[in-house]
Every structure is written in structure tokens, then in C-alpha cells.
Amino acid sequence: MEICKVFPGEEIGGPGFVAAVRGPMPWTRIMPTGGVEANQESIRAWFEAGAACVGMGSKLITQEILASGDYSALAEDVRTILGWIGEVRGGKASVN
Image 1 (cartoon, rainbow, N blue to C red):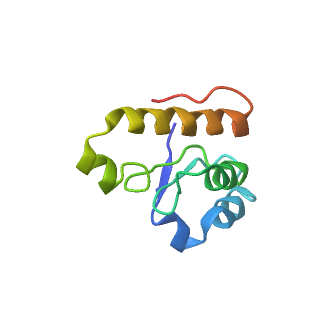
Image 2: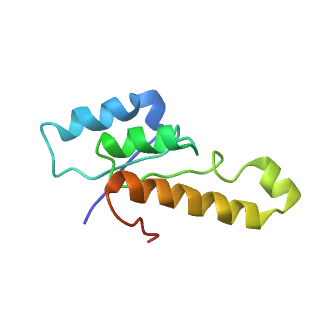
């Protein structure tokens, strides 16, 4: 299956853009990156709009985590975010 990466997601129109594209083309699989925040509200908004998946870089792997080397905190953040994704998708989230 193909996925269209949309970057920068927030500047292109945010979750509303994803919903607008999927309206007439529901088969479209979109992965927004850039503007996906590492918080429950952002995750929920993107997935409720129809995102197939999301990409996060510096919003998840912050300079503070890199500087401190606190990778256990990063792992916990990832588990939390996957939990939110699972909730909004009505099941488990997976890492592919």
C-alpha cells in the first residue's frame, strides 16, 4: 500500500487538510509530518481527520532528551503516544 507523506503538515492545513483530501478520495493514505505534536490532542486531531499514520521528529526526540541521553524517558514517551494512537483508532497501535 502506498502512503503519501505530507510535509509540513501543519503549514499545509493541519488535520483539516487530511480530512478535506480524504473526503472525495477516501482510499488515500496520508502520513503528516511536521506539526504533529507529542500530545494527546494533536494525535487525536490527526487520526480523527483520517491520517493513516503520523511522523514525528524533533517534537518527540527533543534536544533535551538527546543532551541528557535519557532514552528510557523517550521510550516511555513513545509508549504513551502509541497508547493514544491505539485509543483513537479503537485498538492497538503498531510500529512498522
